[in-house]
Length: 306
Picture 1: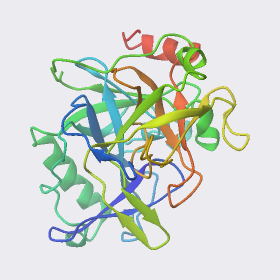
Picture 2: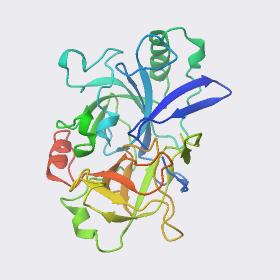
Picture 3: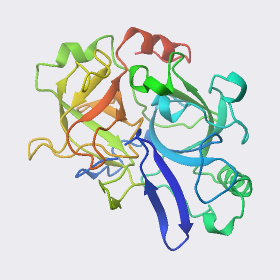
């Protein structure tokens, strides 16, 4: 549930449209800096289109979790096909890995004001040159390279929807997110354990509405099933409650993709927000598990272990 980003004018701010993947916290609460190691991604995909420009290229937002001073875990669909200095990483059969057109901001309310409105550009290439320079010049936005799970397939993204950012320069914090132990969700699925999703996505969504976003928020959920969603992702997609009454309020929506689903009261990232089945962000939160052998092995290649 990544979000298509469209800066219309400085006074108007952000307009958010919704593709199939990527998600935001609905009916949740302000984070109040409880999870400073969770940040908002802003990234450029050269192969996507923006209807305002004749030349290709689009910008998107997601959420990610800093696991140490240099490594962020997020969703695979938030890392696949990211540009490399504005050029495609998928053209000519490329893997879609290793792009460096991605930045992350760990502020509770990231500042986008350094980005000139899209209406001020006549070509997408000119917008990319301006925005990338502005982001590189900002102390709040940290540039990185992106790496989706080696088995990530955009046509079946839910099956291996994990990705990593490697920051160009370290970001030191007093605490970081942590990886889960192997099969952790299997061990707690019948215990009524609560979970905390964190993200920067929309607060309300619908056919004619897109409210909120770009502010770190949290919700409270419980695990519903590990059997996938509508036949998708059996064994790897975890289904959590979403906006299910006073006991566990809130859920995820568009813009929260890649954000952590934390074991309640801990920094353990049991899963990353993956996809929604409703444009109104009702129903369930559908997250990709990180407690599986292939995901832990993938993350270990970046020096991160439980």
